[in-house]
Length: 78
Image 1: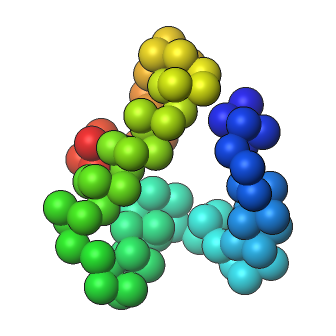
Image 2 (image 1 turned 180 degrees about the horizontal axis):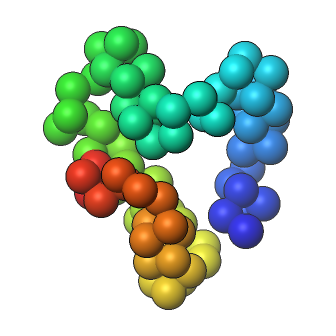
Protein backbone atom coordinates (compact mmCIF):
# COMPACT_ATOMS: atom_id res chain seq x y z
CA UNK A 1 0.00 0.00 0.00
CA UNK A 2 1.30 3.45 -0.92
CA UNK A 3 0.63 5.01 2.47
CA UNK A 4 3.05 2.54 4.08
CA UNK A 5 5.85 3.64 1.74
CA UNK A 6 5.56 7.37 2.42
CA UNK A 7 7.48 8.61 5.47
CA UNK A 8 5.17 10.51 7.81
CA UNK A 9 2.03 9.64 5.85
CA UNK A 10 0.41 7.71 8.68
CA UNK A 11 0.60 10.76 10.96
CA UNK A 12 -0.90 12.94 8.23
CA UNK A 13 -3.75 10.48 7.69
CA UNK A 14 -4.51 10.46 11.43
CA UNK A 15 -4.59 14.26 11.48
CA UNK A 16 -6.77 14.46 8.37
CA UNK A 17 -9.11 11.84 9.77
CA UNK A 18 -9.51 13.68 13.08
CA UNK A 19 -10.19 16.96 11.23
CA UNK A 20 -12.95 15.45 9.10
CA UNK A 21 -10.46 15.21 6.22
CA UNK A 22 -10.67 13.46 2.90
CA UNK A 23 -13.73 11.35 3.59
CA UNK A 24 -15.94 14.38 2.92
CA UNK A 25 -16.29 14.80 -0.82
CA UNK A 26 -13.54 12.52 -2.08
CA UNK A 27 -11.24 13.91 -4.77
CA UNK A 28 -13.56 16.83 -5.48
CA UNK A 29 -13.61 17.71 -1.78
CA UNK A 30 -9.81 17.71 -1.71
CA UNK A 31 -9.77 19.89 -4.84
CA UNK A 32 -12.18 22.33 -3.22
CA UNK A 33 -10.01 22.54 -0.10
CA UNK A 34 -6.86 23.08 -2.18
CA UNK A 35 -8.54 25.86 -4.18
CA UNK A 36 -9.71 27.46 -0.93
CA UNK A 37 -6.07 27.39 0.19
CA UNK A 38 -5.15 29.32 -2.95
CA UNK A 39 -3.98 26.59 -5.34
CA UNK A 40 -5.12 26.83 -8.95
CA UNK A 41 -5.90 23.91 -11.24
CA UNK A 42 -2.41 24.02 -12.75
CA UNK A 43 -0.81 23.80 -9.30
CA UNK A 44 -3.10 20.94 -8.27
CA UNK A 45 -2.14 19.07 -11.44
CA UNK A 46 1.53 19.57 -10.54
CA UNK A 47 1.03 18.24 -7.01
CA UNK A 48 -0.97 15.28 -8.29
CA UNK A 49 1.66 14.52 -10.94
CA UNK A 50 4.45 14.56 -8.35
CA UNK A 51 2.48 12.31 -6.01
CA UNK A 52 1.75 9.84 -8.81
CA UNK A 53 5.39 9.85 -9.93
CA UNK A 54 6.41 8.99 -6.38
CA UNK A 55 3.77 6.28 -6.23
CA UNK A 56 4.98 4.79 -9.53
CA UNK A 57 8.53 4.70 -8.17
CA UNK A 58 7.43 2.92 -4.99
CA UNK A 59 4.60 0.70 -6.25
CA UNK A 60 4.98 0.37 -10.00
CA UNK A 61 2.87 1.46 -12.95
CA UNK A 62 0.24 -1.28 -12.66
CA UNK A 63 -0.59 -0.50 -9.03
CA UNK A 64 -0.80 3.24 -9.73
CA UNK A 65 -3.02 2.60 -12.74
CA UNK A 66 -5.35 0.64 -10.50
CA UNK A 67 -5.43 3.44 -7.93
CA UNK A 68 -6.09 6.13 -10.54
CA UNK A 69 -8.77 4.01 -12.19
CA UNK A 70 -10.55 3.43 -8.89
CA UNK A 71 -10.89 7.13 -7.95
CA UNK A 72 -13.63 8.92 -9.86
CA UNK A 73 -12.57 12.39 -10.94
CA UNK A 74 -8.84 11.88 -10.44
CA UNK A 75 -8.20 11.83 -14.18
CA UNK A 76 -8.98 15.56 -14.49
CA UNK A 77 -6.05 16.38 -12.19
CA UNK A 78 -3.42 14.44 -14.14
